[in-house]
Length: 222
Image (tube, rainbow, N blue to C red; front, side, top):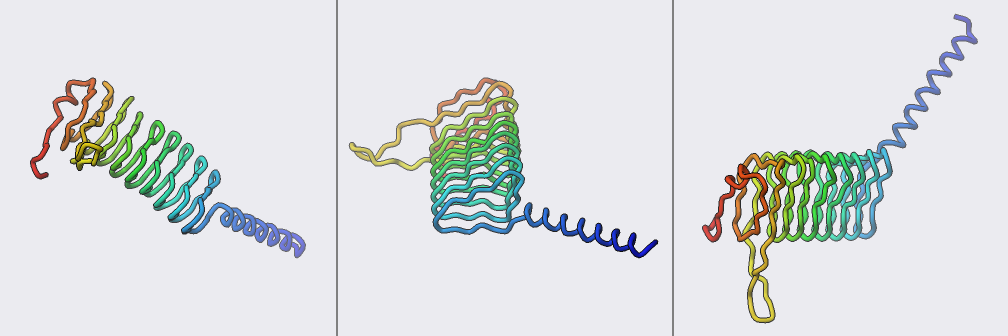
């Protein structure tokens, strides 16, 4: 090989290496940790952990992160987002279609509304918020205390569906909590475990096989 050809080849290799390193640097990001302020993740961007105290998280399509957590704020996810887990205390979790979560989705005061075709490997849990799952799969349990649960399409819950016990709320006339949450399970949705009711719940279950899975455990200490 002539010296000029060798030099040209080396130049191309170096240029290719620089280009690859540049793309890697643009596509790979570290962690986000904020007390005040929101976080925005662009399309095809990939982060480590994202942790906020006062702010919301927005993630564009085909992006990913590891643990996503918020204290006061919502988590807004577009199509085909991949996460290890997502949780918020005061806020909702909503996504477009194709969400993939390795472990769990959880809220205290907020809704959980994954779009169609979500796959969650662990639990889906809320305290004061509705849970709606459409054509989705949950690897473990779905639970709430004061929220409605709605399973539509071909949703599959591989664990139990649980309504945990409710405390009494103070009203003008004293302590009471008479309103009932609603559980709706469409004809083709499946709960592979049991449907455990530790409080009174309005049932709208279209498949008799799912009705047979209902276990009532009100005031039994469990």
